Amino acid sequence: MDALRQVDDWPVEHAAVGVAGAREAVHGEADRVFPWASVTKLASAVAFLVAVEEEIVDLDEPAGPPGSTVRHLLAHTSGLPFERGAPIGRPGERRIYSNHGFDVLAGLVAERAGMPFPEYFAAVWRNGAVLKGQAGSGAEGTLADALDVGRELLEPTRIAPETLAEARTVQFPGLLGVLPGFGRQDPNDWGLGLEIRDAKSPHWTGSRNSPRTVGHFGRSGTFVWADPDAGLALACLTDRDFGDWAREQWPRLSDAVLDEAG
Image 1: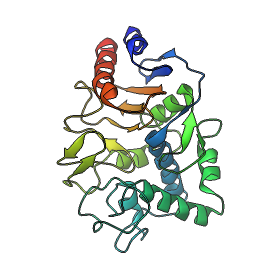
Image 2: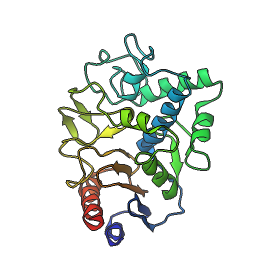
Image 3: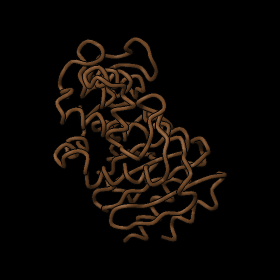
Image 4: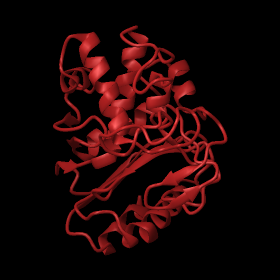
């Protein structure tokens, strides 16, 4: 796919990009292992949803601060701050993006499953991404591993289609919040661990991405999105931290990929 060659002109030293789904193509350093930063949340969310299906946890059981549930933690509405600390809001009132919320949920799954969460994660993503740090930001893997996450968000094999459908549905609709790197969004829609594009502007995906696109980007210069309307997933891994270059280049790449895919 010619659109992927855009990355050759990006201000990065190392990069790997690829599409999966209705089209399959890769470009760049496909065998290089990259840190994923917050793209980790997509893989951890799938693992959490596997735990729900295995009845290790329930979406609507209490978890986190008083009044919060597993669902709140996954949807960034528990009131917990970005990093460890006391709640800064009441559950369900605002979308407060929280790494700490994912750590709290990982601790609950680990306790119930009787194994450290990285081991549970590994059992879900066997021979794929490896979780070496926090549940919300500590994974690393190759382009193939990232595309595997994208495929799971299109045609799931680890979770049931009905579970994915719920995960791609807006949780606690109408909440405003800050999308890191892109400012205040009203509403700032989110599913179960998956960011939902909807009508957000500005945004890191392209103008041609459907409102139903789900995904996540990472501070390490990475992203994965899955657009069910196009039947495509796009993964991008780089070694340059997110910044103005990414705000400019990522939507351009996404639009070029969708244009070429037709």
